[in-house]
Image (tube, rainbow, N blue to C red; front, top):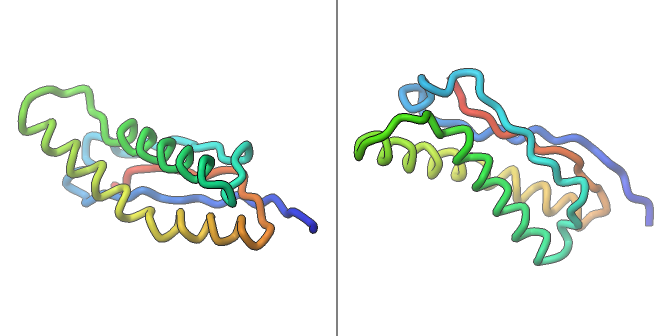
Length: 107
């Protein structure tokens, strides 16, 4: 079975008002070390995407309103990338190994 390696950019997008403080922020999520046909590696992908979303949504500001804003940002970002992550897993099950996911906040 031949394995192909591709690069796939997954964009975690947020509503414009939520992304103002994060303009032009992006995080690379390496997945070339993961075998997405395995449950444990799919769980690692999920953990990496959550960590990247938190990183992209983090502003360094504090307070209850900011905590709520960041939580909503992370939730929206993960919702927007869910389909693309599932497609990456499906590609792996068909023999295509992806190398990189790009996580960013929309302007």
